[in-house]
Length: 320
Length: 270
Image 1: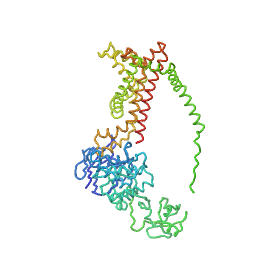
Image 2: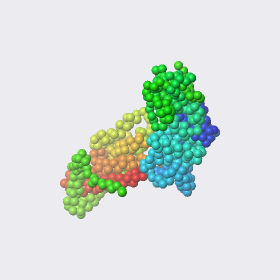
Image 3: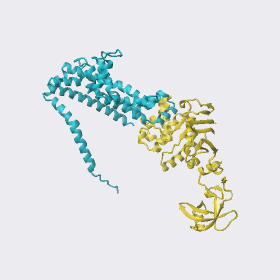
Image 4: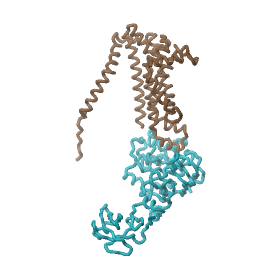
């Protein structure tokens, strides 16, 4: 294991932030710490980096007990949400920073920095200053800076959180590809379930300072440990006292076995998908269908239909 | 076809023009015209007289003392002011708020009162047994007192705004506390440190009230330029006084401009 976190507790003043958190991160993996804000995920990342000290518990990095080690000696690269660029240094010098601290020979630094700048597509901007870069470019520079010292683990705290939607999507894909090239054990914090599912190979769901579930994106999405995880990982709706994904509901004009009658209240066309809002015995629910299905059924407000979870649909029974 | 953008001649909006007019008029009446009058006056008797006025032994001694002491005071302020700002921003200790308020006291106090206070504490009747009266050290002390706030108050806000994550990033890249200070914090503080120092220097060369009591105004020894100017006027030598004033004006201007140039050079990179 590249990172082993055991029974970590951390409070800020009287506010508990992490409660008995244990976590294993496999070497070479790309892990997402996913959860709502205030769930403790950034604090956990900072504990791993040594930027916060846990009240109790241990952190091991590459088999070495790092709990008492300063951030300087942990061999971690850290990327901050707001870039933390060295404003007074050029892009080149930002990336070279860790190598200059390590007093590497000038030629070696030059070669390594240019390699990294090529990796993050900033080779033409080496002489610029951070204030002359866009948010996405600054974050790529920060990533190159963290990678320059060949860290054993790379930690990213909401790395795309400050960027606009378009750039965020681009950088996500790019991070995934970069990881496939560089293979450094990577942990990133996000509150965006789509980002976690798209980029990570392991998702750790953190809420209320505890690890709620760990698994591959598929596992966590299909077999959520509880209603909270199910709600957090994707859209849900409620029929017959169960939580179901809206795309896992069958809708038919006539009665079918196990289906409940429902009245269509609204049909919303959202590009390729159609959202059918229905009322089942006074309870509101919604069903996601394709355009083709919607056209075939010819649904309109006031129509009576029958809905049921599709065979094999994942659902969670809600406690009453 | 390429679009041709016609750029209208830059014309000021009505509001801007009025604002600019008021600002320029005000600045002219309060600062520029009086300064020009002094410079004009200093040339009344021709360049030869100007030169002789400035290089009379007492005037020359006063000028060199003033500029030398001010430079020393500016340097001490650069170091101590930054250190005080650091303590005020980074350290938590009882009485911090009080200390923070005391820093401004030299601004609030009439400078002659400052002189009186210093004379009481470091004069012939010093309860501490330290007598700096009528010495150049006394002049430096008085200048230190009145210029204390400048560097502290320019560095403090910059230090407060400094991105803490920048330091954490440096730490995770392997930089120790001293390296973080030298390579990350200091370069970001230098512009503020320099402008505070420039203000302290220019304030010091113009100081009158606080030095007049403790220095004893001994010509050739402790008389500063401002006091020398005053005594020239008392001796009815207005042109000579204007000549010395002009030298102080030029020194202040050169100091401000060179530090501004230095800062521009610095900020071009940032």
